[in-house]
Length: 114
Length: 115
Image 1 (cartoon, one colour):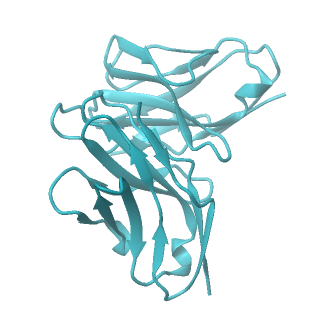
Image 2 (tube, each protein chain N blue to C red):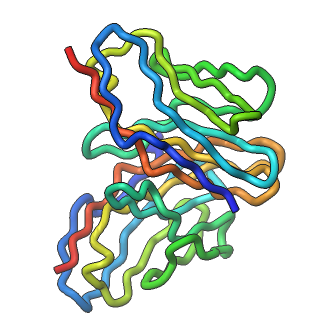
């Protein structure tokens, strides 16, 4: 069975500092990994995905994520946080051997303090 | 393109009432899905479809029905609403390719309260 963990409910970071939002996953086949962001009272917006190849994936709004197969992790990062990055972030996984469905993590609330 | 649209945005029901949440997409996506979002639980898959005439159950299907008569539309029906169905509901869609995992596009959500 597929599963995703986001070990931190809340991450606080000062504006201008680097940020990391953690994600670990479990799948039986090849993992396809995704990050989404949700702003208040909005739907989820796609940020980036890992399929294969380079372990460092670059996405929208200056975000990037690092895939680590040995640690089964896919942490989201940004070198310099903005107040406008404050939102709810979801990691999701799709098992390459198991259909089209995604499994989402519980979400991490990021607060960037001015 | 309008993308994924959902109606209504808000709805209040009494226990036992029925209603249909509408979802439509104009991107010719084969895959469509319904999720519910509850605090601390992320998004949980209710039902999904990989094409017109094909639907299947997700993680939490009880109390919900779906149908897919066209590529564009994927309505979610609550037959007899219960307070446990109070949640925010999201519809999503994507292309289906065996060897390439396309991202899902999400609608704006429907906030449902069952009294």
